[in-house]
Image (cartoon, rainbow, N blue to C red; front, side, top):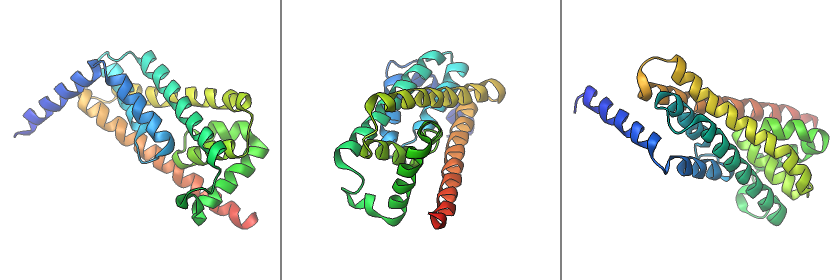
Length: 208
């Protein structure tokens, strides 16, 4: 199979994906899953559909943002409910030294600067999980949690979708290149944010 044929097949597949009625539900499913399992590429999914919205004209960019924001908020609420129900030490993976340290950091930071933390943690995969679980475990009132989580989820969806849209508008090479660059950027930025947050947590640990 030659490279031209392969590229044509990929382009046709992306076009079909963009116009499929299952496109937005599939993206929402990935974003929901990403709330609890950080290995699921929720960021990359939203960025991909932001790129498709510009490169293919579908799905509509505003729909990508709205569905991504709602799915992100529902996923965060699920983590909040889990933390409120089972706490932070029910399962073995929660009792590892690094995870325990992350939960401790999240709980302390929520008490001191809840609004800032909820907003910034939404953009950092593991910090997002730790903060939402800690918010539930610490019994943050639901109205206050929603007041913080909803704008954070909306800002995250805007950022991820517009990142993909900007790549599709700027980078030459058509849909395939736009989607590939968008996915690479989303994954790289998420990994970089997680690394920076982890380094900051380790630096604060001796002080605590």
